[in-house]
Image (cartoon, rainbow, N blue to C red; front, side):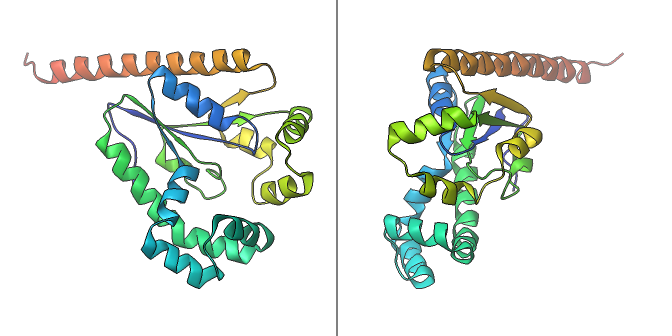
Length: 211
């Protein structure tokens, strides 16, 4: 399976919990990119009757709160669920990307590197934030630190995500500052793909000429 296209860019967007990756996805959508969220796709796919039944048989229940508690407290259950859902999510991503003609398409994948999906994308972008800012967001959103630690235990440390990503976005300032960073990234990709498209046309024209 391959999401890549000669005339379109497809970006894998990731980051740690509360880092701001969903905010980045929203900003990119406002700029004009076609966007997908794997979390939303998982919720949608999990609600399908046939899939919901399989989840019930696998975990003993299919309600979102039950499933969340189960997989974040039992790594075996999480891996079993991933084995069931990941092929379905990949197929849905491929289907929706194929149907869309936007020059920039962005897919938010929280566990992008952990599940080894980076090769499907032209570029990978990681949104990162300092421990201090993450702690502040935990407090603001009323998330228990114990729950946060359970969830991030299934993820690579931010340092590893940073080393694997093609581009890192640091989200440690205000929302306007982060918005400006994401907008600049969008325009940078736009410039890159304008050059790529012009080069494609030049090569096509040259190939059609004879000496």
